[in-house]
Length: 478
Image 1 (tube, rainbow, N blue to C red):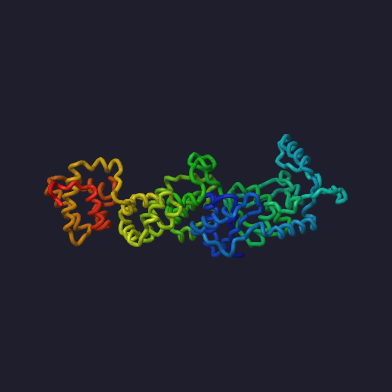
Image 2 (cartoon, rainbow, N blue to C red; image 1 turned 180 degrees about the vertical axis):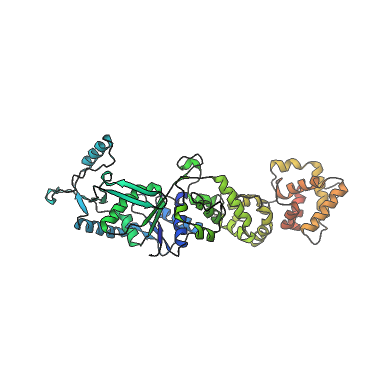
C-alpha cells in the first residue's frame, strides 16, 4: 500500500474559515495517524481575489492550530504551464476537444436545458465536429470528452456509494480560451503530481468529485480515496454565516481560545469516538478515522467551546498559561494595557495569581480581565458594586486594618489571614464585613481570587498603598 498523503487546499480569498480549519485538522490527523504526509496547496488561480494577506492568514491560522505541513506549500498558479500541458496531451489523445461555442450560444444552451429541467447544460455540439469547422479568429476552449453512457461512482468514505449517471454530466472546460486552466483540471493535476492518496474536504465538493474522477479516468490515473465531510451549520441548523458569530480562525484566537481546546472542539464537530469528549492531540491522532465521521452537518455551539476551553485553561500549567496570555495580547481587544506593563515582576505576579484566576475563566480574555487588579494604576477605580461597599464605616475599618498589616512580617497568605481574622474578632464583626471592603479596596471589584492570596500576590508595599488610597484613618492616627 502506498504511503498516505493528504492535503489541505484553501483558496486565499479571505481568512482561514473555521470550516477550513476543521478540514485541515481532519487531513492532518489522518496523515499523522498513519505515518503519512500532510501537504498544503494554495489554490491561487483566481488572481483577482487572491491576496498575500489571505495567504499569510492561512499560514498563521494553521500554525496557531498546531497543524504543521510537510515540505513547502505549493502555489497552484505557479503550475499553470503543467496544467496546460496536460490539457493538450488529452486533446492529442482524443480525450478532449476544442469547443468554439460563443457566449451567446452557451447562454442559449443553458436556458434551454433549464427550461427542460436538464442538469446537463452543454449540448456537445463541438464534441465530434470536423477540425475543418474551426471558426477563424475565435480562440476555443478545451473540453473534456466525458463518457455519455454508464455511471460515475465514488465509494466515499463518509457519504458511502454515490452514483451519477454520465448522461447528466457536462463535458467540462479544462482550458479557457485565454489558455488558463480551470479549477477542475488544476486540482486533478496537482493532486496527482503531489502523490495525494486521500482527498478529505467538504461535501459541497461532492459533485466536483464525480467530475474530477472523469478527468482522472481519462488520463489513466488512479483516483484518490475520497471523503466528503458535512459542512458546519450554525446553532439554528442554518448554513453557517456571519450572523452566527466569528467565522475566521484568527477571530477565535482573539476571543481567547487555546489552540489545544480549539483542536479538541473542531475534531468533535462531526466526528465521534464513543462517548469521549476530551482528547489529547496524541489520542486524536491514534483514534481518528474517516468512517467515524457522521453524514449530518455539525452545529457550532460556542457555549460548548467555552466550557471546553475552561477545562483546558484549568489543566494548563500556570507558567504556560501566562505564556499563552502573552501570545494573545497583540490580538485581544483588551490586551494593549497589559502588554504595555508586562515586566518580569508583573509576569511573576501573574504566575503566582494564576491558580486562583483560572478556576472560573473560560477564555484567555476573561483571564486578562480578571487579572486587571494586578496591573491597574493607582488610585484604583472601583466599579459600582465595589464603590457601594466603601461606606464611611468600611473606610475606617480599612484604615485600622492597614495599620495592623503594616506590622506583619513575613508577608504571606497565612500571616495576613491571621491578622484580618484577629481584627474582625476585636471589632466584633464577621469576617465578611472586613473581607468584602478589603477586596473592593485591593481589586476594585466584589469578586476576585481568595482575598488572602490577593494580598500575598500584590505584596506588602502595593497592598498597603492601595488600602491607604481607600482608608479613612481614625482621628489622630498616622
